[in-house]
Amino acid sequence: MAADSSRKLRSELGGLAPPNSFLSSASVLPASSVPIRTGLTGLFMATLAWVAILHWRLPALPAIVLLVVSTAIPMWLLELRRHSRAFDHGDHERQVPLKQLRLQRLIGLAGVAILFASSITMQNFLAKDWIVGVYEWTLPAAPVLGFFCLWQLFCRPGPPSPIEELGISIVGAWNQKRLDAGGVQILLGWVVKAFFLPLMLAWSYVWLADASDQNWNSIGWASFFAIAMAWLYAIDTAFATIGYMSTSRRIGAHIRSVDTALLGWLSALACYPPLSLLVLRTWLEYKDGFEWDAWLHASPALALVWGAAILLLTAIYTLSTVMFGPRFSNLTNRGIITSGPYRYCKHPAYFCKNLSWWLISVPFVANAGLKTALFNSLALIGVNIIYWLRARTEERHLMQDESYRQYAAWIDKHGLLGSLRHRLAGRS
Image (tube, rainbow, N blue to C red):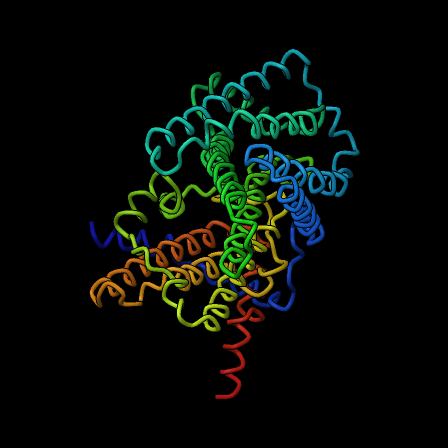
């Protein structure tokens, strides 16, 4: 039994090397599914919104609405224009009776409401000590506004909207007494959105609130660092929020496939509440309250360099999310991204995030004794392993896409590690 389990684990993690048939295409980098201008336009608008938020000292609730809406709409319009030709040849004339169309949308909307209500209830019940009051003040406004915009933009006659697709799947499952493979994928896609959208929205709210709480009367290096980190993470989570709200075929952001592997789901969910409260905050708790700023308090020059390195890593991590435009999502394939940091590494976000945690928490510093430092370092290594598992399972899932296989082959040859490996091989 153990041998069978071991083989099953290796089969989930293995088979990631690109087939020989794709090695010949390693010299060609596939075009990114989202043009770099889309993400940068969203980033520019998000920055303008951030400046307005700081100038007017907006409270977190109107701030999150302004940030999400002002970032999303320009990206939606750019992608809508880019994909409009796909529906110019009769796709908008689907022969579906109006009564049936309304019923499908109504059933789909009811299914969405149930999924989101269940997810939010679970979060409030299991993770109520993680964050206080966020759902109470954020959810009545921003998601309603976001879904209203989506309904107006994408639920017109044309390709089925995500809500309508869920309704069609539910009706089909009811009539056939079972949910087919396509229906499973649609349902899993909505489970992903129902779980992650409230989290991303809440986190963006928290980062905006954190920035507004900073003391703006005395801007020094410490406050600048805190404001910059809050801005980067607010942008990151705002783009993630938009990604989960934008799974529309009209902008090419629909879900192509959802990972169905248990290991993929477990490794991803272990990084988010409520499961992370058990895994990362209990079993693998590596923080002891002594971080880099306290460690380098007596060395201002080194602290400046160290803090700049943290900001750089966090900026690369945020830029990796920005490159998705309105398509960011965990556990799904919504098109392969090959621009920005992804031109040099398959997992720049995971790499930079995990390295920044080492620089922030400095678990190797024996402030509370060598034993504590060793335990904290091993715990953070455990967290790194979880993210390594996420990366490997994501690759296994995305390898079903020919574009990703071509991208992986290109990165293996021309990416940062691939180029270094080839140079070292050439010198030996």
